[in-house]
Image 1 (cartoon, one colour):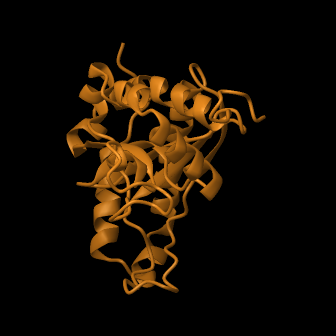
Image 2 (cartoon, one colour):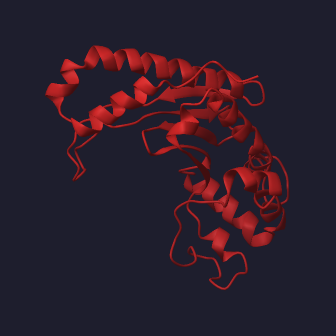
Length: 226
């Protein structure tokens, strides 16, 4: 049954207007309208979290503020033209997270490991150096691939220090992020079943998270480090 909890067209109309009028005067004048839309989207995102908790353990949801940090950016526009939230998985025994990004013409969901700390990154790389077959099997599984496509993320141009640049799995080892991204059209985001589609996508990534949890909670001998 299609969910009735949706992202409204009015939200996207407002974000489009904000993109065209990205200045403090316009925003302050329209702030009450923004607050109403922000509350609506927060309700949708809380429903995403509620759905996630049926099949995963979520530590927290963080909805990002509309205000941009322009201190170190060439782009000095004061506001984002999107609304987004991250969902962190519970504790040291799970790791990873989910992300929802709502923006006219540029909506997406993402999942995985955006910024693994240096210890986790080394552990992942050492696992892949030793044997990447199970990892490749999981990320190449037909169902996961049909929804999420290929593994993405920033990567080094060459091998990380201490790794052989000619290793057969160097394409995986040189990655700095291990993420999946799925994009959506405005029509898909505004449809009645978008919440269900988001949740189905997040359910499909679970085998990847299960493998990564196993890797990040054990040493190379498979012994728990927790």
